[in-house]
Image (cartoon, rainbow, N blue to C red):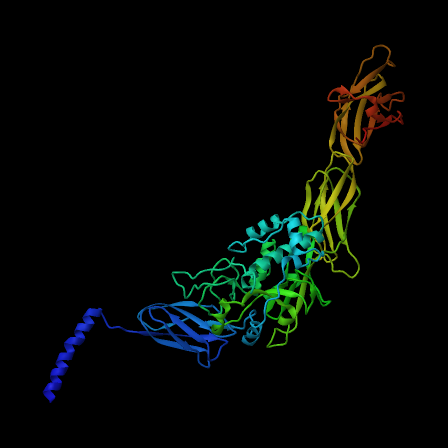
Length: 604
């Protein structure tokens, strides 16, 4: 008997060796472990790679999966009413056990509880025909859109700045903020209704119908209308939800729906339903002169954004917080909802506000915010210049203040100051805490005045505004006018004569010590003979509108010459005489040998 056992063992050894030789080595397997923070037991961990396995976290959020051969694996957590960051991660096993990076469990900021979504699934849509939907101006959506040439369009694959800019430019010109509001509301509703049309029970559109992807029909299934995808923001791309669901479909969550609707009208929406529920988080194009405002009077207008805790939609009809219809994207989170989110009625659809506002678990509870586009407040931009009269090239301080009604917010924003030629003096000066912006600038002009314009760009509360101020200008640029000759007449001959000239304009000396000294001038036998002495040419460039003083000094024969006669003889412009009408000078006078002559040029 023992011999048989030995023989059996002998036969087995070569068989094992043969098996090892065929495989090239032992078939070892390893384990991957990790943890999910903010989680306890019950988080499903799906591991996919060369083999697929599942496990759940323990009471501490830890998990471990063994029996994994070498290769790359994806690890995906999922749990109802939970989202995870990251939603999936990759781990490589190569000859040893692996530890996966940490995954964080988060409470979803969007999505409905399982109990609530199951209740809402039982509700039918409440959408009306376009000719029955009234805009804020009282016209039907259908007739207004036709008259203004506004239509829905398929969105681009991303909500890019370029796509938003193109959408803004595509809206028709509006003559007033109220008309712009109705244009925007019409565009928003047309786009929202297009997204929701695939989930209608009657007159359903096929715009958003897709067949299964042949490459992987389980992961990329077919669908009828847009689906609910938690984290979905691009309805033209198959999107993997961020709540652990595996199926990739064309769809959006509630904030993704609002973001795409807004982008179609040229508005960049805040990210997430919480931010979208805050009026201050929205920034509308300045030239629309519109703002988002929180409405608290219990009314809803078509085009209003209506928000609940963790959910947001757009009002399709006007009415009360009970009767208005709201288009939103509804669905659940987590593994038990993955398949249900793909089929109607989940996804974008219209429901009555009172259905969504029912007490939990039937609904979401009360509405927390209604946001409405309204025209901005108007203020008056006051512009003051100090001083109000300067020489060209001088400095001036410009003060712009937006005067607003009492009890309204302090204006913010920027002011740009330009002169009448269109040149920018100060660009985008921020208003201070009093709603004032100041600009100190050099003012240069060839005319007698300059009209300064201040342009306020508006802010979240106030419309853009402009104000003007006029500044008188005295030119500081030099003219082509010159003092050309100064003539000293009736000078007595003598042996020691000196004549000199000093010219001053204001407090600034333009010329000093322009001197001629005809010392020892011989006049023949008659020493009392008079003669004329000219100092010049003295070329002084004159400033327009400035008064000058010429001071003549003559000393002859040891003292002032009592009979000397001094005058400004000639003005010229580049050598040519200036017409008398363009100059002025006072009468001649003399005092102890000094003569003071005033002269100048016109202001223009």
